[in-house]
Image (tube, rainbow, N blue to C red; front, side, top):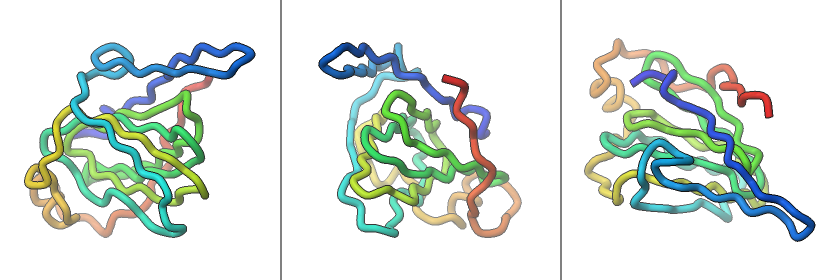
Length: 152
């Protein structure tokens, strides 16, 4: 896995005087068909989510309301992604370590996943992740440089 496989996706919105409608289509808007949709909301101030990687699940994340940061890593390097616009989301390929932090008040993060949930197919500790990736043990996961969103 490499961080170069993480891609920003500009979600096309149709807006008029009534507001905006944004659609996501599996295999078209995002590069995989999805089998599961979940969203995180009412996150306690200062709480983190994620803190794991999936062996065989590709994901797509978007902040449908508010903002949050996702620290992503491939075991060798890390980047920080800021989700703060419901018109932009990020692909999170399988074997990407993710830690979701700094949720704004009222933030809602929606995730589309390529598989049904199976906890046994996730890696829950940093040490286990490093071993599974076969990379030299590095220091504790820290936020990395910002993974910039393309110009809108």
